[in-house]
Image (cartoon, rainbow, N blue to C red; front, side):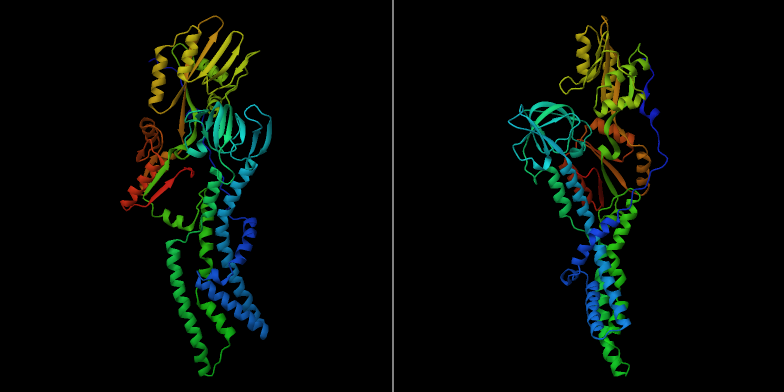
Length: 529
């Protein structure tokens, strides 16, 4: 095959020199919201789990009574410091638990802000804009390109291309149409093209987002193994010092150096590891806060500790190793066509294409062109699988190889064998080929080139895997793609192993198999599937 100029994404990629650190996980608002929870935690029944703080609270209550009966500056100072110690410890624990509630609140806000276009009387009825949370099973809504599906349901009319990456993690859009086994849609997914009518199948509280909220709210802050062991040690030391101070009262009295209970209470709090007991939760939060500043979100101190023991790291491909959306990687002109000519046609054919793939072509070429005068835009459709424009004397199409091939032949042209070779080579490497063609005046239509779409591997990912390998951590890429696609991306990314065509059950089986081998396994992915 004749070598022709090719524009690739690497030629246009800008490498950022600075990444702004993420903001702190703790804010004044979060601390203020945690105060009521901290006060509720002062209930002695809840402090039983932390005997150190329970002893401090009992001491604070005792010194309060003694200061009221026999007021003194020292008595009130001791009382204030003891209560501050107890409240601070409870506040740290409350802040830790409040992080999960904040995540649930953000999910609820997203759910509330999503609007829906409900139809009265079926697909042809009048439209009414309502909140997605007001939808009930049996309601019928209409969703067009660029809008999010407001709830779980079934397509009862129309066909559309839908981006389900938020749910499945796979970047390739899927076709959803009425009838058959491709009619189910999930709330929160994005319609990329065309128009569909959806019948809602779930009531409020039973949708996918609602289940996610329930998972977040149902989680509790986990104590780390080291924290549990340290708590046992602190409890033992507390019991010993309680006995010591109790005995000291009688020994001091026997020696003629009588000590008040106020002094002995203050001594007890000084002796027992009060600070460590109060700061256990705060230490965990501080560690997670420092990770957030490095753009790493840790859900618990237990996760931070476990990360240090990881020796196998499983990674979802889409959105983790790759960017998550198929993007135009290169434009390959056929023999006899210049690179500029193929690029211009690809741009014209993408002017009305609002899919991520269509916009990525404009980004790759790096220039935008206005359509010819009196041009009619042909938007991408899941039915035609093409986009383009028609104008007097010129028609341009870009789309799936089979669809464009049929269009060229319909307009009297012939597809050169070279096109099929390019398309096959792209498909074998896991990419998606889009053929570009034009039809001028009365001349036969002809193919100009092929756009190579691929799920682009993130910059610097190979170097990061090299660092993990040097640390003794094995990396395994998991994907639902076929074996050929998975192997190509795995080789480019530099992972140690790959699991292709993986279902959720396959992922779980791999994790359990590695764990049975005595390995600590970490999973890195989008978190929803």
